[in-house]
Image (cartoon, rainbow, N blue to C red; front, side):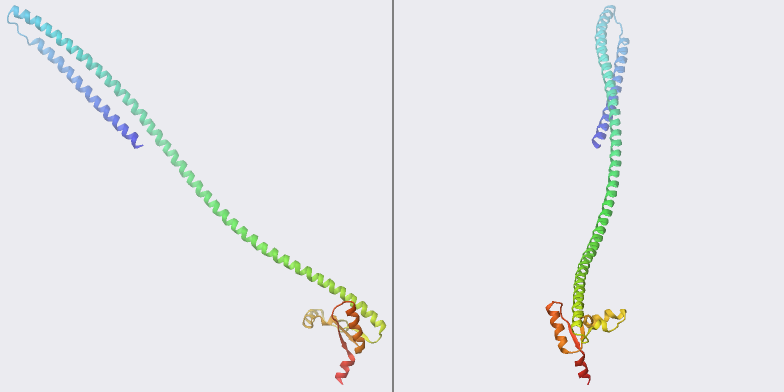
Length: 258
């Protein structure tokens, strides 16, 4: 941009110098014409011969000067025309340069506007990226929380399945124990009274607490009359692999009481 302005200033300076040269040449031409007129009227005739000789000489000189002046005039006219032509070319070039300068300024403004738009878009996209990063981070945290819950649920599910299997196994054992105990009652009537849990009544709201305290002794303890039948029950349960069973012997309790 500075180079273009410098070129315009140089062209303006050249144009001004050309105009000054034209004025000087026009002034010189007028001076020559004035001098010719003065010389043609200043001659005095002394004698006829001298007059004739002088006239001839003057005519020759005049013709020489006229020819010379005419050539200089033509040369000057030619220079003036060339100067005017150069001036016109310079003016035309100056207009062209000014037009290019305006175009450059307009292009510069357009680029500046585009740059501002790009900056605005960049800032907008940067804000969107920040928002998305925060959203991704939040989503990751939610996924981690849900994963932890899922792991806990899986663990609880596994524990529940194990508890169910254990309960099913215990239920099966209870059925087997009751079946064997019923048969023993038939074989040894009036000597087996049954499981402790069936002989005492406990409210439902206290049953869980009582079982927890007694560690399921209510469902694994059998009340019998004497020690012999207790030994037989333990033997039968052991043979059928039904777990550990306890027997409360009434005769022993009566003896301790006495």
